[in-house]
Length: 229
Image (cartoon, rainbow, N blue to C red; front, side, top):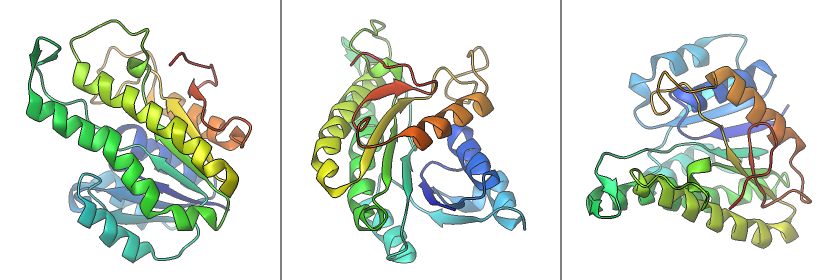
């Protein structure tokens, strides 16, 4: 049994990752902002057949991450999944950008995953564990739509950060995975998306299981297909 720490665990892909990892027999530290409102997540925590512990954490707040770190302490963590993210409000086009939105999206989608990873790195080094960031194909330079540039830029930037992180952590035996979950039917992806949340989460967990130091730092999707930077 492994210990997972999953951020953004209260809904969508994060909630399904918690559900499936717990069903696979793992201990899951499910981190989210405002756990009192996370009814489905709290219901999982209450079940006798799920080893789920809800941890309050707002990834955009350094103090909140520090409080979560104090709560978890030195507990070994095998897999950290940086899943928390936001799309951000419009406008986001290059010629009509809300700069407050750009700043917020970068803070949550780019800065926060690295900050969370650094906070829990000792826990991961104890197991020679795995660090995951949930990215997006919209972060690829081949994605030409420009209406969501704050979001796209945040994912491009986090890809570069975690590619570099993979090089830095390889000597420590910690692998890094950068994954696109696909276009998923969530509040963010919308009802017209091609994938169910169950399919995406299962694929992501399968790729995480396969992740090793040889694959560390690569960018792929939930099905294992390599993606262009």
